[in-house]
Structure formats: C-alpha cells, structure tokens
Image (cartoon, rainbow, N blue to C red; front, side, top):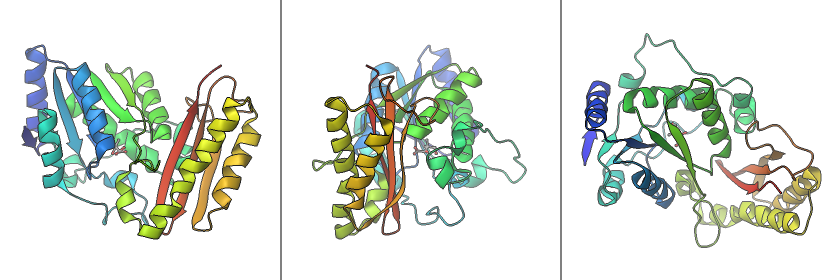
Amino acid sequence: MQVIHEIAAMQAWSLQAAREGRAVGFVPTMGALHAGHISLVRLAKARAQAVVVSIFVNPLQFGPTEDYSRYPRTLASDCRLLEPEGVDVVFAPSAEEMYPTDAVTVVEVAGLSERLDGQSRPGHFRGVSTVVAKLFGIVQPRVAVFGQKDAAQVAVLRRMVRDLNLPLELVVGPIVREADGLALSSRNAYLSPDERKQALVLHRALGQVAEAAAKGERSAQALQALAEQVIATEPGAKLDYCAVVDPETLLPVADTAGGALVAVAAYFGNTRLIDNLLLDRE
Ligand code: PAF
C-alpha cells in the first residue's frame, strides 16, 4: 500500500492504472477510520480493480466555530486498518496542497446544499462538493463509495455527479452500527460515557418511526412528531433537526408512500450527531 501526499503523484498513479485498464474504486474520508469506513472500502474493492482511500480533513466544510482543529488526525493507525483490506493507495494531501491561496473555484449544488445539515451548517455542503469534485479530478475513479449515514451529503453529491456529467458510479453503503444501535461516526470519540448513553435516543427514535411505518403510518407529520417525542424523552439531547424528506431533493414530503428519508441531528454536549432511516417506496 502506497501513501501519496502530492496531487501530481496521485494523478500520475491514476493515469497509469487507467493505462493498465484497471478501474479505480474510491473512498473519500476524513480519516479517524472505523468499521463503517472499512465497509465502504470493501464495497469499492468488490467493484473495482484498484482501490484508493483519501484521508483529508477538509477545512472548507467546517464552520468557523466547528471542530476543524480538534478533528482526530490518526493517519498511522488509519493506514494500519487499511493495509489488510488490500487498499492500493492512501491519498493524504495537505491543506496547502489542496487549497493554494489563489484557488477561487467552488462547486455549489444550489438549493440542496441549504437543506438539512446545510441549513444548520451554512457553507458545509459547498465545502463537501468542492473537495469531492477536486478529489474526483485527482483520483479519477470509476466508482466512488459514500456512507448512507450522511444521507444529505449523498443527495448533494449524486446531484453534482449528475449535473456535471462526471463519468463515475456513485455507490452508497448502509449505515454500520455498534451492537447497541449507535451509528458509527468518527465524532463518537468526543462523547463522554454519559453522552454515549444519551446518544442512543437517536436510534430509538428511528426504531419507533420504522415500527409505526411498518404498521401503516404514512403521514410525514405524524412520523416526525413521533421521532421528536422520543428524542424529547432524553434531557441530554438537544435536537438540531428532525425531518421527513424526499431522499433525492431533501424537500419535505407530506406522505411517505413514495419513499422518504427520516433524518435527525442532535447535540449531546458539544457533539453533533446525525442518523437516519430510509423508508422504501411502497
Ligand atoms: O463524509 C466525509 O467524511 C466527508 O464529507 C468527505 C466526503 C470525505 C468530504 O470531505
């Protein structure tokens, strides 16, 4: 497994892979890898002849009061997790390499970028779509794999790939959870033992929504109210948003019969966690 830090070297490697007829599967990450990321690497591995994982804590997607500086940076242990997975390249550029001071181009998926997390975190999705577009240009993947936990990010990036005619397939891996239901996230490392227990309320709320939906409840308002009620039972949780939306447009739906995304975000202490549930089209 090679670790590449320079953009030019990464592009040269990808060009060589293309010359050899090897399709590249790509998993963009910010590092602090966990089993959720590894599940995405395995999906990439199953779909492509070569696998690249990027590790880059992208300053552009953090707000001024967010956790950019304290976000965990664990390149050596991340590489130890990736090596046995048969990853070919870890691409770990510096912020200076990715954003020279004279860079002025951004990619903005208008509308979608202001919904869900985009509403709570202004500029976040502009940062995500800009860095992912750059990473696609550098790594030139045939397949790129993202996690369903970041459902709004998936919607934004799907739309970017479609609108810009990017020649790759976007694959989405299911949410990976701890045994007790907590969705894996690099930010779980910030939780105190008490907050860790409180955070289970998100999974409980979504579980009750899934049960109600399975019993035939289709009213988005009723399902949203149910999730909010469950989250309100946990005094340690500060709700950021709870929404029932179309998974592609992220716009609210009235009825879930056509398929819906139930998305929640809440703070436990200073840590903001997200989780979601996809309700299939009937
Ligand atoms: O999902 C993430 O970890 C990040 O948003 C991504 C896609 C790597 C872009 O920085």
